[in-house]
Image (cartoon, rainbow, N blue to C red; front, side, top):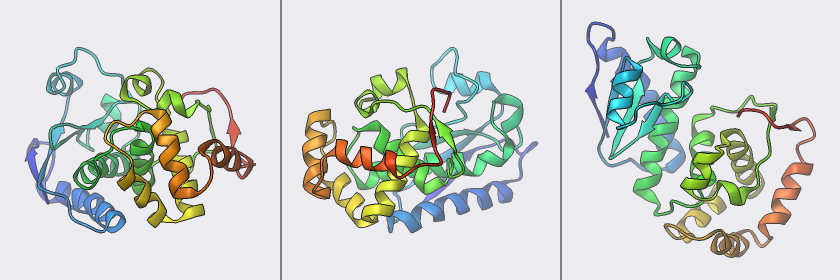
Length: 222
C-alpha cells in the first residue's frame, strides 16, 4: 500500500489527497490483480522544489510526476495548472500512471522496451484515451531509456499497447512482459514478441496502423 509522506496542509487536505490516491491505486490493483509493495507519495508545490527532488536544474513544463526509489513525486492538484502545461483535470491520470510504474516494477523485471512500460501505464490510467492524432516514431527508437528520452512518444505507446490488449487479450500481454528480460535488446524483444503472439512485431504494427483509419499519423508533440 502507499503512504502520503509529504504535502502542505496549508494548501491541501490530507483526506482529499487520500481519496485521489485511493482511486488511482485501485485502478492499478484492478488491472494488475495484485497489491503493490509499500511506497510513498510526495506532493510538490513549486517547480524549484520538484527539480531539487530530482537533482535537476530544469524540468520541462509538461513533466508533472515521476516514480523514483519507490516514491511517486507529483505536483499537488491545487497547483497542477499553474506550474505546468497540464490542466487540473489531468491530475488523476498522471497519478495513476506513476503508480502503475510502481506496480510494474514490483511484478515484472523488464525495463526495455520503454514504450511498453509507458504504454501499460498509459493504458491503466486512461490518460490518452481521447487522442486522435500523433506523430509516428519507429519503435526501435523508443526501446531504451536513452533513446526514449531523446524523443518520447506517450500517445503512440498507449495506442499500440491498447491495441495489443484489445486484439490479443490482457493475458497475452502479461505473458509477454513475464518473458522479456530486464534490459533485452530490441532484437531479443522481437524474438520474444513472436513467441507470444505468433506473428512478427512488424506485421502486428502494420496491422495496427491499418486498423486505425480515424487516427492521423502526423508529426506533432505527443
